[in-house]
Image 1 (tube, rainbow, N blue to C red):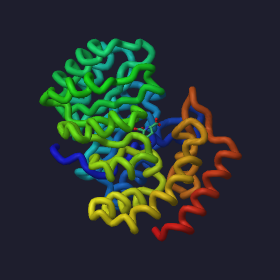
Image 2: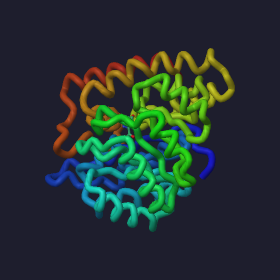
Image 3: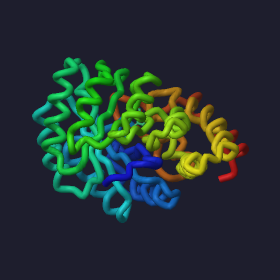
Image 4: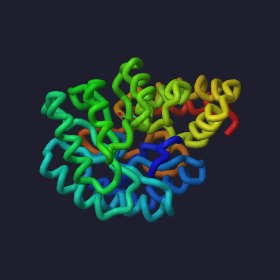
Length: 295
Ligand SMILES: O=C(O)C1=N[C@H](C(=O)O)C[C@H](O)C1
């Protein structure tokens, strides 16, 4: 895949409200079809929003199977998480049997590897992966930042194609976009607009589960340099994004999807379901959003 530009939905993994909170494959299909008809570029499965820490290996592959089958050609990037490197390599071998557009991975959390260690780690993943690898820089989750020279060194690898940027540094984002070798995708929903204005490729967003059409419309408007159309969408999205992230993601994204009748709002431990107050705030934000932006 050479063109990564567009809106990628960090798709939730829906659970049934039964005892074990089993994966809701019918609900997942509904979400995939809805994203596809909204015109998104593709889906990121098993990203942070997909609660991969709560899914065993077999469940992860089953989730990917459902998404790939119901997306009918829609590109899918799979999240490769965990901090046991041997287990990550084994899961990657399983991913290699699937028609994925890409694999995305962040530094193994908690271990806090050095920058040279990160280069070795990601080069090894890129060597082992059939699909192109995307880096995921998210220091507030992993405990270690990917520094600019590290990312630039990795950009030289033939199988490293892009980065999901949650690095929190505007200078680093701009340097990567100017370097031009990696597709730079905003990993913070609120930064999709700024990323595209700077010449970035797009965004991987959780809020797009809830209003995919709005993100897609903003993307196309910015591709045409149509700021009068794009700005009001960003202005209306920001309070909604704030509301959706006011509790640990994806509890409130799921609550919003439940309100739309698409899935249940269940998350798995160690997260807990959305609070009543959070839910009320999201519903209010959705109403305000819809009043501002005709969908
Ligand atoms: O799952 C993702 O990928 C995303 N996760 C971020 C997070 O929850 O930390 C947010 C972003 O919207 C996409």
